Image (cartoon, rainbow, N blue to C red; front, side):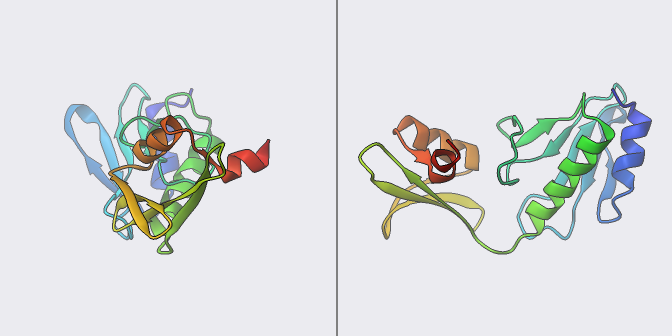
Length: 155
């Protein structure tokens, strides 16, 4: 496991991130040029080595994120930490709209789109639902029997 100081060195090598010391010697790093409402890339980096990186918008990331879209970086290697930070910054830099197609067993399709910092689900041109996070919208779609077309194609 990387030490707190090693993680700080890696994170501070990203000039686009601004350090913000918070309580209990923890540190956040902000990406102020974010095109999203979200600016915190590194969240609550603690002297014990624990901390989080925003990974919710990273496409096909494979990261296990919490309800805030954060992935725990406690046991990340140097390369893994550099990669997730690069991906996080890139995901917050993308101005183009995000869209996924979901399909169920009856071949009905829904579109999941990120619009104005909310996640909308459309059936054709009809708004089916609005969610505050990608994971909330994806959970809803899975519960309704839908799967991402990308996941089906990968099988």
